[in-house]
Image (tube, rainbow, N blue to C red; front, side, top):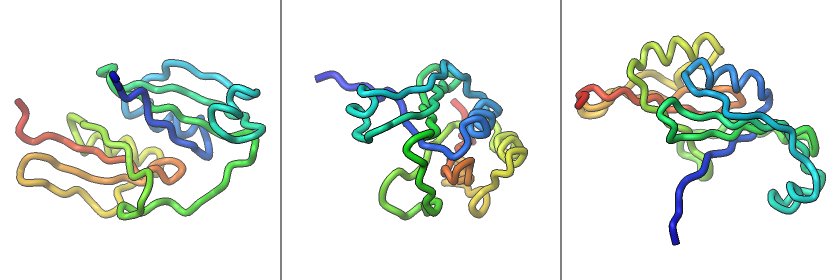
Length: 145
């Protein structure tokens, strides 16, 4: 059986704010839609499923994020996850300049959980608390090529 990662889907509190955050980082919006009906109830396993969605893509064309904001049923707020909690952990991006990525995130009120660490002089890494509490990792390769 052939298998390929299609996308990572994330439920968000504010679709427009989250799109703005990720497009400022360089992702592009491939499409938007509002979905509901029997097919979504069946596929998602949630009766009365009605959501606004957007599909975003990384500049290299390889990574995709599907963002969705529930209209019905009402979205359930939870505490933002911690890096050591079981479940969806983070979305990670390679960046050319980690300081530039952090400046972009800061314009959206999103800041590192602690700071920027260096892994064996190979990568600079940081976790940022993004929109809707999403943990976003930035990784800048130090030894290019």
